[in-house]
Image 1 (cartoon, rainbow, N blue to C red):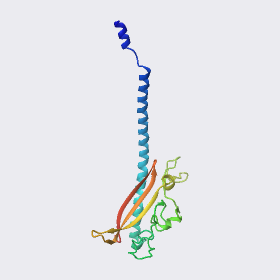
Image 2 (cartoon, helix red, strand yellow):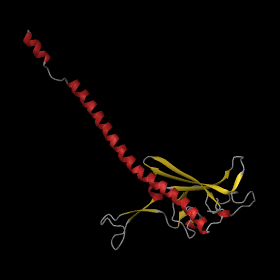
Image 3 (cartoon, one colour):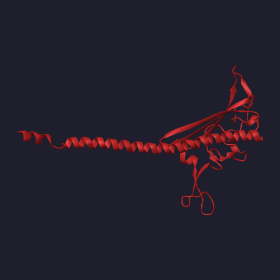
Length: 207
């Protein structure tokens, strides 16, 4: 009788217990795989986020440079048709920055981003902004046989840039004539969701 009880106590796993263990293990492995996939997606996203930040800063720097060099006057640093540059005078046609989201282009002859001379037609860049990658065969960026890979930012990640110039108010709520706000918003796709980055600063009429 004692021998039969011990034999009963030493029996192995049942089929149901084995199946439950396999399900638990499978859930753990799937969760680990999903976490790895998300980690890789975030790594790729961080690269695109960095590009967005640089493209916003690049646009703002071009405006400051144009002001410093005199290639853009104070009366032109506003959006097309905006009253910001005209102090209420209409019609107002001195602004040079296009309204709304625009594809990322190389700047035209004026050296300023998102102005009319960047485009050959409405919404079509004369030269699209690209990211350079080393030649897949040699790992180099230039030279004979070392042509780099050019990735167009707008077609790859749907990069768009919006430049908005607005007035700045003082504590009393009055417009400060020699100060304006520049807001540059970059929208793009990274992974499954659309993303955006906005950089805002003020610019004065002189250095």
